[in-house]
View (cartoon, rainbow, N blue to C red):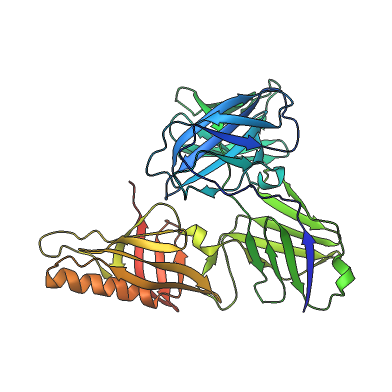
Length: 402
């Protein structure tokens, strides 16, 4: 199996030096358009935006500084982007706030990192709107309504049910049926790269990072993929494409499972080489589907959680930054979370040692046992997480509302 490298011209920004800076410096490699805006987002471990800062950018500028307020203790990451005509055109990687004592830091913005399947808008009602571009308009998805909207002569979009969306500069107005209009602002994307895309049947594999792409495909001569680089296209139409010479890989937001594995991938992948389609594949990071907001456990080894010792136990789990953590019946716990050779593994689990009634302690031990035997997961249509040991469900959970 041949390995062919193709460079992606995606320069990484330097690591954050600290989080006590008075301002955050942003740099990019081309002049900003007229009425451009810089956006900085500080998020907590669940990915929730704690602070969003927006500042106008001078036309033609290639750098800017955004004043920072005192950073909340819950802030764990920072990300920045450049908005032009209502679209994210440049974006930085998601950077951890690991050192909170240095005097300042800098983020680099790149067009190749502003990759999204849809345009995202953060609205005044606290909800996020997803806009997918279509040939004659857009498809808009709001938590309370979704529909196809046709482009109007006035420049806005309207559905037959009265759902309306219009964009002026970097501001959008959303009118839900029977509701007062609300304003929305462009939101940054969850970083797509790095990702791995294996074929469902194992016949090919692509590993793509911000620096390079590695393609494993049997029967190719080294010169078959000779190319100066790969081009990423993200038209916000629900698909992301990657091209290099005779190679084309398309990614779509379809949950996907490899043959013989009991673990989900967030993306589907389709590879075409020299005009010939190869086996369908999966892509992305499986853990990204269950990261973010914490989960509340519903059942362990098929037994629903009920009232124990006069109370209903709340057992939680949260996955972030390669760790699993949460609360058992009485104790806090912490461990590692990783995927290896198509298996999900929770390991190195440790707990606090708070005294616990025997019945609650037994339930907590069964919960930890379920984590240790987990090899994969599924997510139901209703959004329920199902941890599995092979084909056997060992734990179910749902996202906590708060």
